[in-house]
Amino acid sequence: MRALKTSLLIVGFAALSFAQTAPELEAPAVLRVADKFRCTCGCNLTMACKMEGDCHICRQAKSKIFAMQAAGKSDDQIVDAFVQDEGKDVLAIRPGPMGVIGPWAALGLGAILVIFVIRRFSAPKPALAPAVAAIDSEVLDRYHERIEKDLAKLE
Image 1 (tube, rainbow, N blue to C red):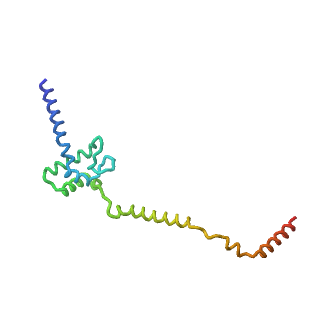
Image 2 (spheres, rainbow, N blue to C red):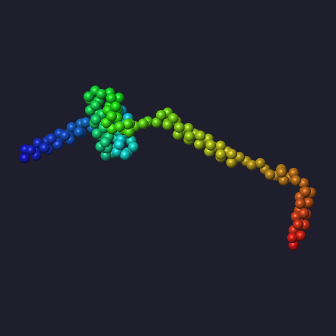
Image 3 (cartoon, helix red, strand yellow):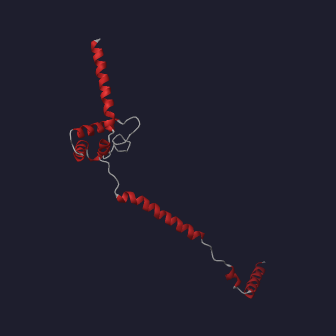
């Protein structure tokens, strides 16, 4: 009976110790470093994410980061340790300035192209009336007579 009580007491204290470190794992210093790493669970987010259900991979990494920070290591040393342990694939690569500006520039150029095409095809067409009025009625009569003669030959 005493062993059971001791086991329950140890489990209770272990649960309380994890509960006490949960806010420490979400501290800005830990999140700043965790944001440099890509989560390997498949969610395609950084390890600073706050997923519902608490991602176990991110939680382990944050615990490791917190322990390293408590040991007095700098951010660069922590990053180097993670890269050494897990490889360069763990680093989250941020887009450079062209990665941010590029999509907006393409959107702007596309909008300019759409406006140009709309204006081009909605421009008023020149009227055909002056060209038709310039033809003499004598010329029209002559062509009409010729068409009539050709039709008479066909019959």
